[in-house]
Image (cartoon, rainbow, N blue to C red; front, side, top):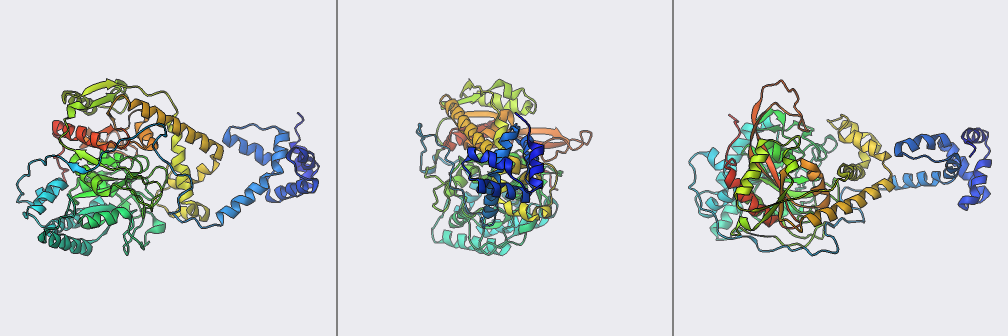
Length: 584
């Protein structure tokens, strides 16, 4: 075909639209409409050359005639975008299409009844406050129910520790001392009347500062929202209040739920404060590891519970997508955001999940799937899958391999599994696209410049770049997501759980996009140089420090009970969960 690009430019610059009229017959446009479309394109500066350059961003190659035809209709598309952007889209306005991790041709069992079975022996109440502070939350709750410890006394222990360690760990945005004391007094009064609100009655906690608490600052970790005061209370915070758990404060998160850099600083890893705590549930993991809370609440879109738990040596549970309501929490990615507990023991995560589980009409993605965990189920009934290559790949180490050996020694049936070779990393474009939509106003108003983290991998650059990802490619990526959901459903027909290094074989990406639950628990220790956000050493020659290392268990949808059974047995076998960071 003859290249008419130059001719087109000349015709438009002279006010003529003959080429547009020629293309009009193919599009059904009248001569007048084609002339007007061409004129509008000229006024907006969109030319055939503009289209030719834009094609490079999408790996496309249109002909000159095809570009001519596009120019007849592209302006209407641009005008439609302007009208759309003029609308107010509040953060809590979810898209019409709602993600459901359940495949329509499969049934999903989900036992109810909460945490059941015999309670482990209750240890004696320690005399040292530090020992009380680091005890698992379910043990603290039993001391409270037995009258050996009051909720108010436990709150005071934690408030003193927060005052001491918060300045150098930078893990709280807001400390709610008066509220915590009032809620603790109420919990103690309830207990005196014989009312036990939950299995964690009286245990204080920290809440990631993206969940609203009426009348309190909820900053989302970001400079543009640092003074934001919530009008309402998130469903999850209301459930914890009803469960008798005092709120010690709002823990830090990387700005807009990414990383460990927030408007006030960088949240630190208690095991090595030279490095950040990872994120984005940075403060929740740091505070839990440092013994500043009984437990904490995190969220995960793509690693924000697993990654800081790995860095800080906490036990993090990312539940199945839809188990816990996100109503009243900042939306980052509607089809991916999940709420979960960060604790110091596997059992604690089960108790927190029992409190938070449940459908909520205020969250279109929440599902009515009961939760139950029988602690008496023998672990050796489980079939655990693994791929030997996961434990030999870059990033795996002797701690991971020792955890695999420990699982084998538990008497479970081990079965090798394989994942097909698919472009799993391509799924992450969905994260950036949804997040860019959630915070479009920041990009269009240039307020994204106020965010503290501004490098190539930070949100501002990601929000701008994803604008050049096409809607067609977005849908094709979503179809890949469906394919991966089927892959995982087939694997879990053969096994009850997978054991793997935290970041092996794209399993962190896979599990988040398919909605499968993952439990990350401490497996041992590694001497490391201080790391950056993404795990690489900041300075390989820097002195090495003993830090924690976690391993992950991933399970079928809504079978967190299997993960808890396996995780609790593995935790006991490894015997490293009680070690504390050297805070001084």
